[in-house]
Length: 419
Image: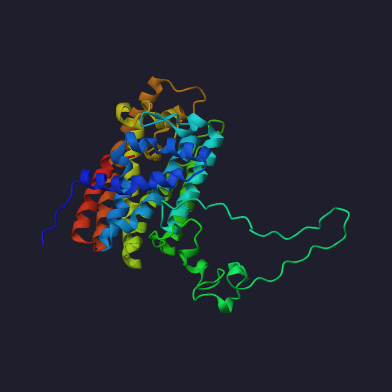
């Protein structure tokens, strides 16, 4: 049998065709204010298509890597993308970014408070999709009103108690009035073996006769939950490394670098690790292969973040859609900045601690100081080493030959085209 390998462009286009329609459908289920925020946030997918599909492609190909059907991982890919968009919205808000990829950020359009609520709605939707395995599930229909009401006394001054309705029998009874012993097999009120344990026939959102997708394994929901916790912890760590011009305390450069790397692993590493792990779970992979693919994603996420932080200083504004030196303008302690400070670049520390606004000349000077300290070269090498580690871990997962070739190609592509 001849295996036809697809190009990275083909894989990314395929992932977009599979994931974007249900992603849009899922977002369309949100209430109007949150839906507006989510649609603004997803707008970057329309105008920056290739890079926005990397996570979805990793999830789908990871399902095939363990011998599963990538179509079974579509819901997982939708859930990962919703978590990513929530994280990006939160980061834009915290960092005060007004644009991303030549588009206004969602919070700059609707305001910080509506954007925060919209982001939380996307996060809740991600768990709903992961738990049900169905991005297109409709919102619950309103509960039906009772067809019979308990009679009231006929007048306010009458002390006659309400007469209870006679007990109904046969077909006239509601399901709740049918004794358990008389109910059909499998028809329970949510106890073990009933709707609460997987009987989807009582789902008020279900269409009669429609095929219901199988729910994602509980392990997938746990992985998603752990990822969100790591993203939040990474944000806390990152906030702790933010420059405070009001304090005179100078932290050790090596301590700062360790904290920055930890924040990156908890943020970018955790998200790509989650994408690969959820794909492997949806594909039916055993625990060992799921873990290997997760580690592959974690190392790849670290490599991508090193590249992205390099772009945050030396990136072309025409490509990034942000002003020149965006991370230095915000005085963000990105990986190159932390590496330069760890190398003893006191001049950089003095520049970034200035209370006054940094001029373009100051920003260019800071970038040159970072480069002279060797931090730029070090970050490039770290990205290359982390990519090599990711590919080694991938090899240990013993994936399907076609899938491993596509994962390798995606990994190399992602480190050259950071989000």
